[in-house]
Amino acid sequence: MNQGGHDRLVSYRLFSGFFCKKITCARHLSRSSGLGKSVWNVGLLVVLTLFLHGCTVKYPVGQPTRPVPAPLPAPVLRPDSAPLPAPVPVPLPDPAVRSSRDFVPVPEEGKAAGTLLASARQSVRSGQFSQAEMTLERALRLEPRNARLWHEMAQVKYGQQEYGQVVQFCIKSNSLAGKDYGLIQQNWRLMERAYLDLGQPEKARQARIKSG
Image (cartoon, rainbow, N blue to C red; front, top):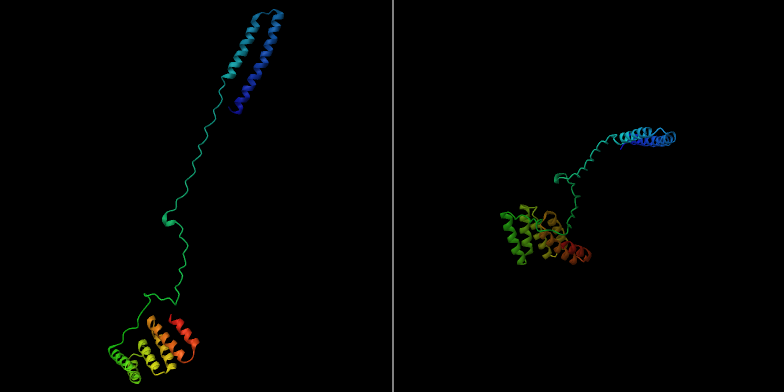
């Protein structure tokens, strides 16, 4: 019930109560004055009419409330819009640790230099270091950037007890060896022996460490 209908109902009830009091007074007056039941009946009929009229008043029905819309579901991220994970840094390998995939041997000598190298090795096995030195010099003129030939020359110098030149030729071989870590290791081990013979134990220790 709205406020207007409520106010009219209260007004009807107050009016009916007031009129009932008046009818009661009229009833007492009619009894005392002898007017009879006619006045009483008329008053009662008026009160009943007003009461019924107040009960049959139609009150406007309130408008239906608008339905509350349901909350929208949370958006679902598609796989292509999902946030990318933070990149995980990959630790770099220790330079001292060499994998077999990184190993690249020094290329084989050409036919002429290969023949001279085989001859020089035969001379070393025979103890003919001077002959081996001359043979390797010829091979190096053919292939001056061949790291293996420089290592063979260092071995010849070690047999001749020329330890200073052993170190120099090993360093030259390492500068040309690239990723032939096997050859580099052989050079460091030969340098360790040369440093020991030169009376330089600290350099020999460093060479041993570098040889792995």
